[in-house]
Length: 329
Image (cartoon, rainbow, N blue to C red; front, side, top):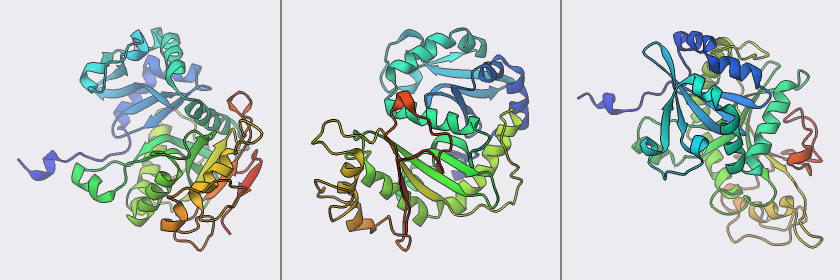
């Protein structure tokens, strides 16, 4: 067998036949009816249907027909472990439409405030015609041909949101969302995200992969009937990406407690900036430098809002609605 036949084919986007069939099926009408709460993610020859940035259905095109897979939990509220074959149903599009209210109700039970806030930011931004940005993807994962390539890259994280500026030259925003202080430290904390973002840049994954994938994502979105407020034909240049950390619910839980911003500072810096009360023994600055400085190899913008899930009113995901902005200088 040819060595390459064992490798995973990387193809962000879907075929024209897939797109045409999707627009004829019940799922497209479901999306049109509920696009104030749903997001369609373009993947490698399939689509993900997201509610609260939670993939509630995988949509595929097989033998000329639309076919779907769904986690059994959404229909019977039982967890079936990690075996993908055992935990998933193959289901017809009309069954997803029929059970839609039950599916989203069960999704509500399992998803965190962070994921719900992430979804709200994306949907509010994309509904706002005056926003400077358009969110084209959520839960982006860099695809690899095989495990060896993935291991060598030392990059296995995802971007919470990818946004594109509406004006040319298009700016690309790669965004990580934090809600409160719960996920600032630990395995999925700020240090891990900086390491992944830095590796992404060092390995040339933007120029080598993401720039082309963005064009394919937008083409597929247009083909399936999603309104995208700009044209992005083949060959158009996209600037290098900008990195953003957005923190919502930036509130101290008690009078003496730290805010998420203060807690984050303890993981970012070697000194007590931003009102930091306690430094971490493993900090970003020691390995990656001060990422709030533009002349640093990797740098990011930090946006903070006191808004909680119930009262998020940010309708321009980068440029408006935040209490504090820390821009690299």
